[in-house]
Length: 157
Ligand SMILES: [Zn+2]
Ligand SMILES: [Zn+2]
Image (tube, rainbow, N blue to C red; front, side):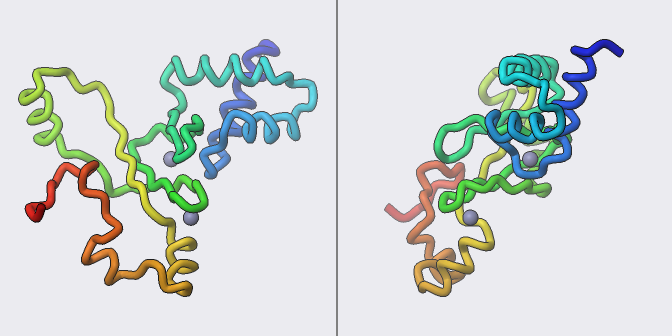
């Protein structure tokens, strides 16, 4: 195995082991702690290559920063609008009928999709609950829920 393949494998493995959905900078710091000889350009080049080859995923976080995910099995993400944490959500799969339906209605071909849920992670929710800002009740009457980004439009005007 050549040096460049080894480098690519190390970068890929490091990302796969991280569950934090790191930015390129965070990933670079982590890789560098394992192999100090790796330069920033090498990490950037390899991460782009891995992405182009469909071996990793990209997600845009609340600040518009690209975050990387080594887990390419299908899952959606919750982006916490308070702490900017990205959390894996497994129960966000569209069934094949819905995908067919979308393709037919829009006359398009669907290759892949990402589901992003925005809100508060459980830690931030608990913190806010203590401060009395959010709560289950609030969620129910949806004063904080932005329907304009939602497929199910509220009937109330
Ligand atoms: Zn949070
Ligand atoms: Zn993920």
